[in-house]
Image (cartoon, rainbow, N blue to C red; front, side, top):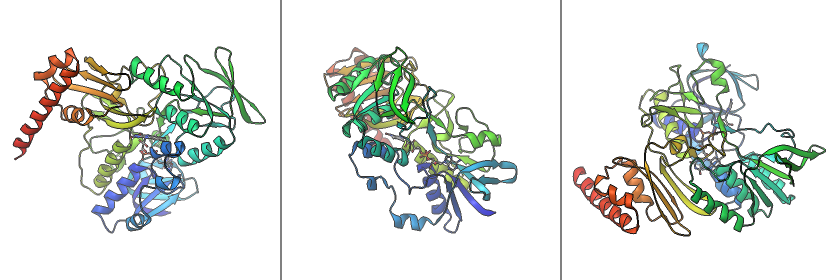
Length: 442
Ligand SMILES: Cc1cc2nc3c(=O)[nH]c(=O)nc-3n(C[C@H](O)[C@H](O)[C@H](O)COP(=O)(O)OP(=O)(O)OC[C@H]3O[C@@H](n4cnc5c(N)ncnc54)[C@H](O)[C@@H]3O)c2cc1C
């Protein structure tokens, strides 16, 4: 039996950040990290860049070997198969038993698997881990045609990755638009047009009936409306699910994720939770929400790790913010901006926050040209969210106003009327706000 005072399950960014926080506060601590991931710590968002060929695999590493040496982790490469909170025990897939004092569950999320006939054929892939990405890179070398299904960013990353590896791509969408939970029709059209221009064949309102194969290998897919599309690769990105099976079996309070209090404690006091598997209170909506975002997993990991050593800091859910690349367009999403139509998605996708989808009574204001797109959700007194595609000139200003929940009453009407002048007025208002804030800080 292994005695492990601080035990972390999961070696993603939440687990790593927690280990670093524990080490910073307790130089002598024995920190044990159990994970079924065999690779060294790597960036999951970076997988999309690696798949596209933008960066080499080596650039995915997020810590230098000497940093890791200083961290002095006891690492165990195994799967936790059972948790017994009453006796502080973990049972591992290699037959080992671990007794912990403080436990962190940082088990992340996994891609939702398809269930149509033929789903087990070789050539059907997902983009979850480094192993998955290496497999896609290998397959792409000898593949001509691929089909990708899914309506969110990961599906798009698969499309772009395969395209850059000279594979002909068919992109199947359940509805008539892309990422309809977050993007409006116009933004979705911009993305789809760019993909068509790159040579992607878009199939709207198309679902798979079955995958067809020969000798266990994928050769084609049949759609619900009777079309057959030959393919060697089928990329599936229909959402992710938090990995909460051991928490459920152990009797911890769960919904879609593992429920936590503001200190990131589960319903059992010496079990903390961080990252994609944590479902946290959102004071803005009064509900609990899931985030599948790297910076949030990192921040939660840091706080949970420090709290395991006795600090007891609160995690307050900030306004979600992310910068990503959508069909080659730099896109920033801040706050709540989505329509929540839920046409294309069956679950939350990687690189997404549920709070983006939540849209209170707000008026949408657009400022567009052919290539760039700016959309703001204007509430009674504040800007509640913004989506900036292409030209990022307004991104910092909007991030400031939204995340600081600034009262924009003096410029609200002009914003609602719209037009270039309205944005200039907003910029002047922001400049005044910055000066006022500086004075206040002195
Ligand atoms: C392709 C891709 C693109 C992304 N793009 C973005 C982006 O643009 N922006 C953004 O903010 N986020 C993005 N994300 C999401 C972001 O990477 C995740 O939110 C973040 O990595 C979550 O970290 P985590 O530590 O919570 O979980 P994970 O990184 O999933 O780590 C969980 C770990 O736990 C291990 N584990 C699980 N269960 C067990 C068990 N029972 N026993 C042992 N080990 C177990 C797993 O093997 C894994 O190592 C992307 C993710 C992917 C895959």
